[in-house]
Image (cartoon, rainbow, N blue to C red; front, top):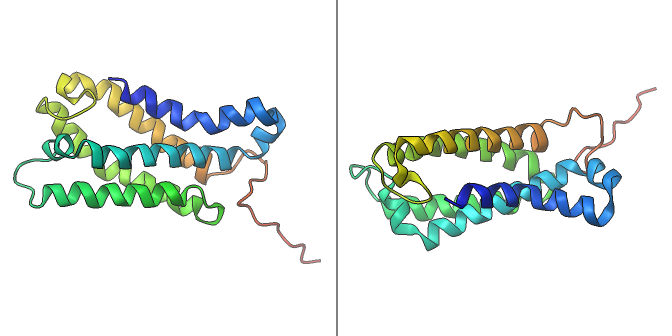
Length: 167
C-alpha cells in the first residue's frame, strides 16, 4: 500500500529539492520543468513495475485479453519513453499529454483488478482501493495538465519561446 505514497514523493521530489537547493524564486520560475521531472520519475517507476512485477500486472488484465505479457512489456516501454520525454524541455508538453492519455486508458485495468481483488499495490483490497486509486489518478492527471502543460501562472518556463514584437 506504499505505492501511492512513493508516487507522490517522486512527483514532488524535484520541485522540493529545487526549493531547498536553489531557493523559492528559482523553483517557482522553473516549476514546469521540475513538475515534468517529477512526472518523469513517476513514469520510470511505473516502467520498473512492469518489468519487476510482470505477473502481478498480467493478472490485472482480464483473461480474455490476448498477449497479456506482451501488453505489459510494451506498455512498460511506452511508460519509459514518456518518462524520458518528460526530461527533455522541447518534448515535455507532448509527453505530459501522452501521460494523461495513459492514465485514462489504463484506469479500466485498475477498476477490473480492484473489483476482482487481484493485482498489486492494494488492488487486492477490492473496490475500496478505488477510493485511493481514483483520487491518485486525478492528482496525476491534474499534475500533468496544470503543472506540465498549462502554464497560466504568468511565469515563463524553460520550454516557453520568447514572443517577438511585430512592431
